[in-house]
Image (cartoon, rainbow, N blue to C red; front, side):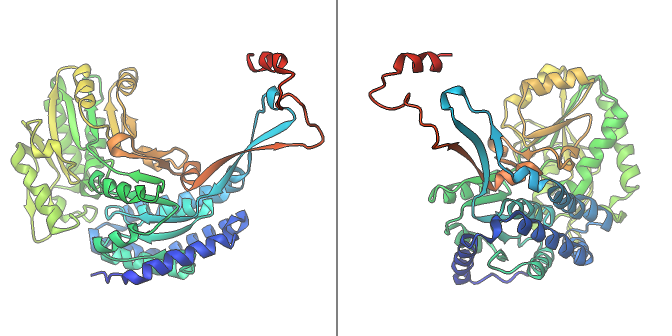
Amino acid sequence: MITNTPIENIKTIVAQQRTYFRSNQTLDIAYRMKMLRRLRDAIKMYEEELVEALRTDLNKSYEEAFMTEISIVLGEIDNFLKNLARWASPSKKATPLKLFPSRSAVLTEPLGVALIIAPWNYPVQLTLNPLVGAIAAGCTAVLKPSPYTPNVAKALERVVKSAFDEEYVAVVQGDRTVNTALLAERYDIIFFTGSPDLGRVVMRAAAEHLTPVVLELGGKSPVVVDKSADVRVAAKRIAWGKSLNAGQTCIAPDYLLIHRDIKEQFVSEYQRALERLHGDDASKSKHYVRMVSDRAFERVAGYMNDGVVRIGGRVDASERYIEPTLLDNVAVDSAVMREEIFGPVLPLITIGSIDEAVDFVRDREKPLAMYVFAEESIARGVFDKTSSGGGCINDVIMHIANENMPFGGVGNSGMGRYHGRDSLYAFSHRRAVISTTTRIDLPFRYMPYRWFRLVKRLLSR
């Protein structure tokens, strides 16, 4: 169990961080890089503890914990250490003749005190990756790990306390009452990862202070399998993506739109793919994660009633285990098709054409991710006609692994983006500055506008 941080401490923490930010120490690029190296060292020092906490809370294996959590954060830090000085330097811009003799540049300045609220499904990655961006931008940060993964939350607090003073980076622990108290304070940026419903709560709180937000939400990410797809590869990659973290991934394939001509072949290949990944009994696989809570288990297990189980379907409440499951004959208005599943149950919807898939996706909220298995020209046509936060052609999940590309949602699946340079910008203000010499002072702009005809010709070009 997590002990709530006393509410009265929150005001103190935020005030201390605001004072520290105003000391201007974080403005120095060398200081930011020093802090990034300190964070990297702390992660490596506590790697075993973080991995063990992930195993205890979610039954994640060492391999999965390292690949999907720790390595992503370390990669983000290394990317910043290599590029921060260049990314954060003033960006010179062309200056039009009408502004002669001025020079133009865009400055990247830190927003200030950041609040980062993290979820439970990838609790290390989704707490520390935004922190990397905040540090790189020159912000201070208040971190709020999820109480649903208490061992990870405690381990993260030890990581942060070993590396930073609380006036610079602090960890606040607790339930939703603590979240409410946190959101009552004024910040310069709020970075939230979670559900669309909670995203609305965060946005309403931020509106009280006109605080900018980055909302990394979720939704129902579709995977389309056209008859032109390589069915065996599609089944293998979808089975991996859907069973990774037991489907508790914001960009996991949420439902499957599959062409009727290859449906039965796909079902057979999906079964074989799951057996190759997890053996005959996934409950005995060391790489198969459990549901995070009894509540999550009951919700996802309940989806079994919304269709015909073609593959899987076994559950064990005592272990919060749900077998990778493929559901057929699912009504489009059923709970499993209305709600984000966040579990290893994959509903299957039969389509007759790629245009039918496009219409199905466009009739619903914009998803965080979209996946299309088809000949590339067909897949690109689907992407041209739809909208999503990101996605893959002939793959799933992997777009998040490229630290050189932005990650974020659109519409109901979120706003703002991060990773790499976009993380720097997420926690920064891009400030346009004109610098004008005093040695030359042209008369064109001054009243009574005697040079107006000439100015008009210049402005009309």
